[in-house]
Amino acid sequence: MWEIFGTRKNSKTQVVRYDRYRLSAAEAFTGLAKGILAAGLLAWTFYRSIWVFFAMLPAACAAAPVYEAGRLKKKRLQELTKQVKESMVVLASHLSAGLAMENALAASRGELVMLYGEQGMIVKEFTYMVEQIRVNRTVEQMLEDFAERSGLEDVQNFAEVFSAAKRGGGDISGIMRHTAEVIRDKMQVREEIRTLTASRQLEQKIMSLFPFFIVFYVEGASPGFFELMYGTDMGRLLMSGCLAAYLASLAAAKRILDIPV
Image 1: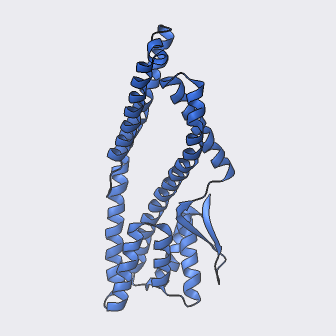
Image 2: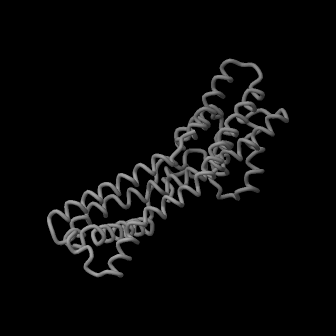
């Protein structure tokens, strides 16, 4: 669910805050369900205790929706980044044809509609920018507004370069065409890195399930094998250490696979 500010003056297009995410009722329920399931799985695997499950439940119910919102926000920003990259290609082609920035935005919108439809994120943004430019708002203002709402560094860089080029004069179309191509290439590198690490991310998700599979298998093959681990103070202390190591490994794997560009 998008974080919508509503319709601004002189525009019928809804303005979206992409760097925030408000969960819908269904998404919030899904997040809670995942949190409860995770608490139950951890409590059974590491402690085999219903009381530990109830102790974990409040933290799980509080953290799970936040995690779900972060996951969906990241997914939406990745899609927005992809659409921005394509818009840079289209925009650069129109600037190369000699169109001014204002006209290039309007011409690019038509091509982006064919790629993403009227409901595409970047289509709505270009529609909003074109509408506002027609009522005498400047391109600089619209680019800065989009950069601030999206939270994307590449859009921020594009807006800053355009403002500097506008103030300094010169071949604005040529400068912006070159800037769009550089940002597009940077986005392409980021997308290639994401593609190359996709298999490693899948492997990490599978490996994160291994401890549970091992416990289920051993418990099924040799019932009571872990009785000392769940029935003594030393065993519970050791399992708590294993849980801490497991969570630390998940955090480390996430940092390793999150490669900034």
